[in-house]
Image (cartoon, rainbow, N blue to C red; front, side, top):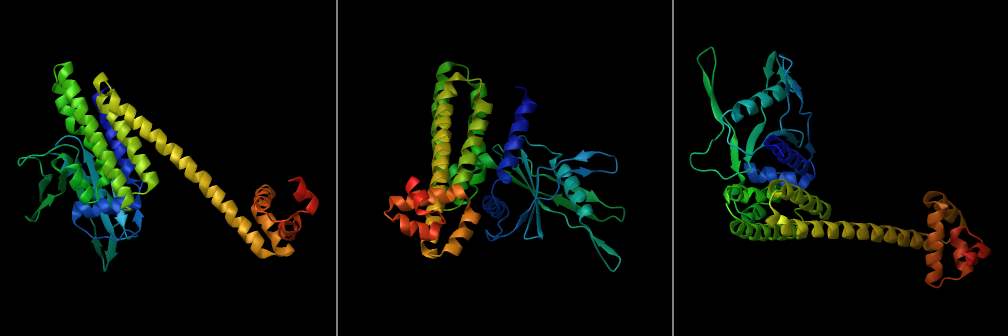
Length: 329
């Protein structure tokens, strides 16, 4: 697969993760910017397509508005780029133009707070995206944006800071070492390290689920996207297939568990409806319930009533079915 296609996969996975969970995104914003937004804060994702005066289309990664007021712009990047700050400024300026306010003839442009999430490790000399704005009146302003280098932080720290939404990208840690590996033995060693890292990510996700940082569906999505990225990065190395198969097994188990939970929820709803009908003890309410829940569901409830030992006469009082129909069921 061509390099730029791989980068598109990273971009799509990042957007999918950000759009998947309100709570996890608020945790991420709090972790990146040191804010303390409550988990029940509202989140909006404004339209992120802008058309400039030169008819150029701009697509910033993610724009987020928290509580209807606080604006954030997140960009995911796999390489340092000295022009990233300029692009972020352009995105933010277009957003500010679209949402400008006016008071007493004075226009106000509110720029989003921004952060570049580099999916790599940084050094002391790593790029901190910024540039100088020079205005005709001689005034200047240094525009700076935050930079977060993912691989400078270990999995435990990301978990402690509740930034687990970024965990799938941690499999990039071995990417360069794998590309430089010159023989099968070295690749086997790296594949064992990758498998251990995958296990650590999975355990972190499960602990985050227990703590309520992610829900069950979000954990399943996180694992699926982890597998997607793992396959994308290590697809050409047969030594790395074992961890990929383990991820596939876990995903299948999660899917089966989700289906089982749905069946249990349906069962619980039917039980609840049955209890409602038994409590109603009135032909009028029973008929209303019959219309509301549908005849097929009511038949299932009647079967359950018979299982728990209610007589046909008792069931007839609340179900709307005759004694004969109940006995036939």
